[in-house]
Image (cartoon, rainbow, N blue to C red; front, top):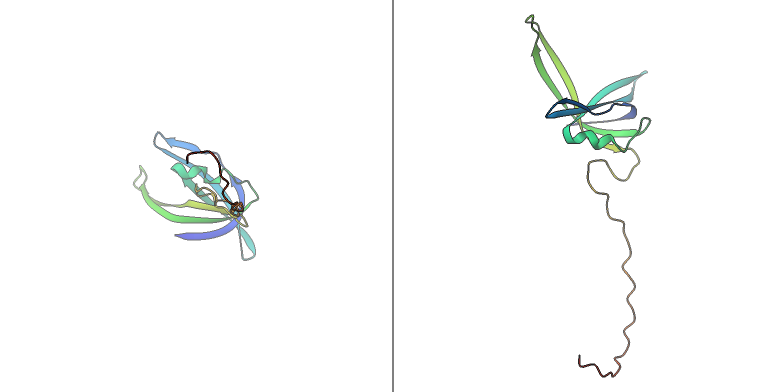
Length: 126
């Protein structure tokens, strides 16, 4: 698991790659050294909605995994690909994250108790 902070530069629409696989890509600007770095991430399957409540320009914290795979081209040449799969996004400075968890309940003080009045005689049998 890795974590990085950056500013959302670009958010793509969700793409249905196959009948059973969908992904959504986004890019952040990561300030490192003299020049900014533009880093592309992807959200897959149900995680595609994690970025719905965010917009370009938002400062975010991203939890992600690095995935790699090998592919052999028809001519026999072997190539390697890497993917940065985001699985949690948080707006920086926000109190709730976009992890599909409900927001924390609002703290409400308990109601004030009514004073206990002395019992009155009445005609009720209970």
